[in-house]
Amino acid sequence: MKQDNLSQPLVTEDRVLIVDDSPENLRVLGSILSERYRVNVANSGRRALEILNEYKDFDVIILDIVMPEMDGVELCKSIKVKDEFREVPVIFISGLSDIDDKKSAFEVGGVDYIVKPFEKEEVIMRVETHLRIRRLQKELISKNRELEANYKRLKELEQLKDNLTNMIVHDLRSPLTGIISMFEILKMECESSENRNMMEYIKSGYLAANSLLDMINSLLDIARLEEGKLPLNVGIHNASQIVYSAISFVSMNTKNTKGNEVVPDIKADVRVICDADLIRRVLINLITNSIKHSNSKSPIKVVVQSLNSFAMFSVIDDGIGIPKEYHDKIFEKFGQVEIRGKNKKYSTGLGLTFCKLVVEAHNGTIGVESEVGKGSKFYFTIPSSS
Image (tube, rainbow, N blue to C red; front, side, top):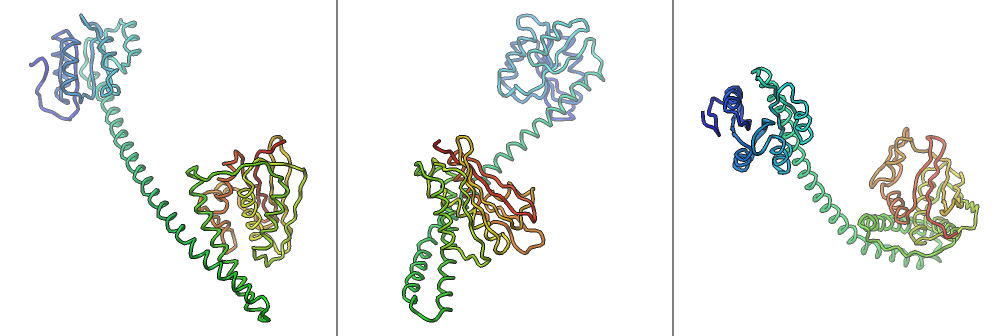
């Protein structure tokens, strides 16, 4: 029998290192284990480190606790500081009465011990148990690496998709702006016309083109908000002025065929710290959504109230409502909710995402209280100056 290698018929590719200064222990353990595994032996800590540096692919290490020069505890410490062996299970050889030695062995990273004199069945059972755990660890590490590589690739593909989308959307904005300009010219040219149908067609086209432009701007702004590249023009503004401006825009630029009245309810004279244009757009989105999903001629309330060092804006309707399980989803990008019993979806999947990102950029919060058939209350908070 060679001191370093025991060549026997192999059953598995697992490699085991046995370290003991006793030739008899090496012979007995080597004879038991070489029937199943690739076995290396070392008669000292120094020789064990030489073998570990040479092979680096051991699956289990068996150490005698009591050895001259470098004992098993010291050797285990030296092994465990190496990255390639940190997860390799170390089983100690111990006598029945060596309680303190066993305690030290577990403290430095040992996972088990084999009691002298050796029983073949026990030796095989303990080694095989830790080899099985080791195999599972290796499989898990391999799977994790594969998942990390796949995740990285998916992120790269997602970034490519976003870049392509943003490029296309950006290119769409110019011709669409031209179409809107043409509609505006047509409106001026036909204002004196007695053809009412023509004016309605022009107005419908103008509103549709503006709606599409809003979607394009939202996509581009969402991308910039996600990357933290949308600059905020922050100042101190009167909350009521922002509300009235948003309501005015909606009344002039939204097709409100159901006759809903948007009613401001300003409960406090609040001054807010914000980018007024962005917060106005948030309110426009919320009001427009409420009109879209409300009952005919029912009022839409826009409430402003003071809340400690924040101002709370709420948009309240008595419309179709949203199931509770979808209250978070509607704020996700492209997140849409199927309305039960109705052939339509709640949200375009862009407006509420834009609202969420803008509010969070102002260190505020946004949410919804809603019940199916009883309406919705969308609310958000932003810092106030008082």
